[in-house]
Length: 325
Image (tube, rainbow, N blue to C red; front, side, top):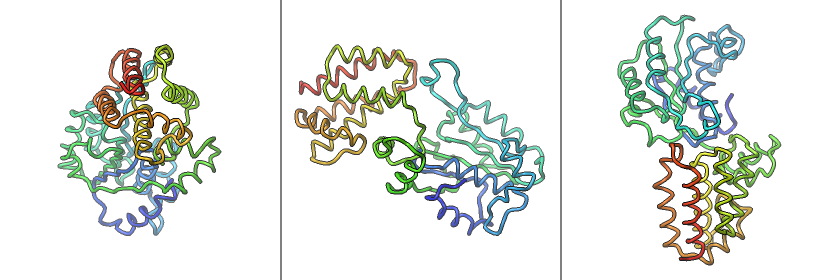
């Protein structure tokens, strides 16, 4: 399927169908439908009876196989799903063995006799070895093979990989479109959740994480040492990745920084009053110092750190900031 905010991009792509490349880099904001767009494109490329607008017919054998997840000429690479209670804390990657396994199959004949399509998402999750293995086949691609790379953060992708793809930037929906979509899906408190997710409406709903985040926001509004220690223990008990805590705190500090400049919040509109109160008692230079600490720790958000100790340290640093020390 294609979401309404991507229909114009599809029409433009269809107008230049005959000049399509052998590799697309489909980029844009996370949780806005890029992977769905890429799957729609993959089905159209594999369809045996596409219509005049290059849409898949939905009825041919290839379309049936694609819908059932069993098309023999369609390959999909995504980070391996970790198992166990600490899965959320593991750094998810596409590894070289997975890339090599697919590449080896590309030099065989297509089972259905048409194109072969490889979807990789998110492309920036390939580790260096996997990206270099892909680069070799992008430089000399087999005949009748199309690569679809979906990317949330182009800056994290090897420049040499990007240079061998035609880039397609997909727009995010505007606020009204995104809010209407969430309300149509029956999402509770849609406006607040949309703000937290930066206007990207296709996020996964997790009521438990929402509750844990709300607890953190209440704590940030009125931090206390014992409450900080209790919260860090609760956060660690439920095996939340440090990346989540860093993200929640970064967004809070950005809202506080906006409040220091008499501007409305971006991420936590329901906590606008609390943010203004914190802004009124703190200083921008110390806010920037704390943000710098978070930015330096962010790359390790899914590594094997002592999450409880790190959360305690961050929140104690925040308490000192709140106390204007």
